[in-house]
Image 1 (cartoon, rainbow, N blue to C red):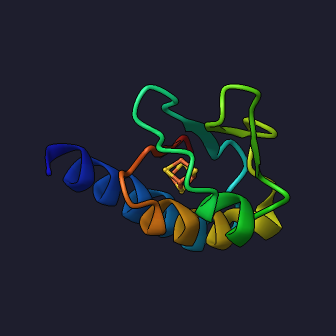
Image 2 (cartoon, rainbow, N blue to C red):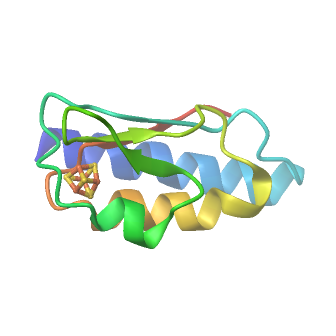
Length: 90
Ligand code: SF4
């Protein structure tokens, strides 16, 4: 639950800063493959940001999140059943 709470604070900060300044450049995403279960939910929700790796876990296609995918990235991170998607930056 601590990870979940920390993520929500980070995500809220990202959205708040983005709305206020008009820029979301620098938002980053990664998958903690040590806890990813390989359910493929993130790949289905956000195929431009996530793909499956050879190890049958997901990985971020790109570390930097394009502006137009920020909301989708945040929604996908929220939906991950084990909270393996880490969003940071801004
Ligand atoms: S949704 Fe979460 S657990 Fe499922 S594949 Fe993606 S990162 Fe892994």
